[in-house]
Image (cartoon, rainbow, N blue to C red; front, side, top):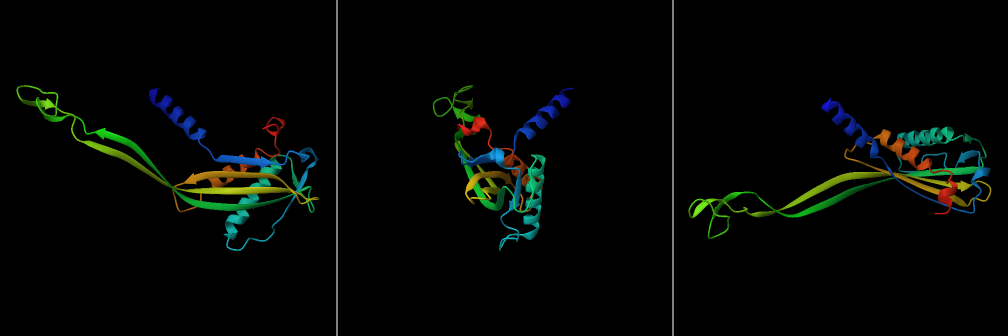
Length: 191
């Protein structure tokens, strides 16, 4: 029973971690008028992996379809995206610690003990430093009013990975998490 509770706790904590999302929008835009969309870029941008471009575009198509939008040419709004990747390094200095109990001397550096020498002392101080190295991948989605060509919404979904290989499940989660905030809800319109 205890193992089952531990497994449930681990599952809940694993589900709690997800992509970081940031959005911005034009409060003057009438998001209720948008029903269809088209793509700004139909060709793969120079230097981008064409397989990644196709997968992310399909992910955006699926996320928009799930929210009730349909692809049309021309659409009410136009959408584009870019993918960013940055290697990150975080250093955590936990400060000085001591190595624990050691041999000490009553009159020198310890707590004393039996006679002049015994168990005591706190040992020698050392510093504890942890280094966290990872890759931060982001999907940046920009939406424009198709008629005026003005930007109306900007969303970024970021996630971290520890492998050289792209984790498309995490990339999909970042797309879905970012587009979950499109269109902005009235509560977010007040900021």
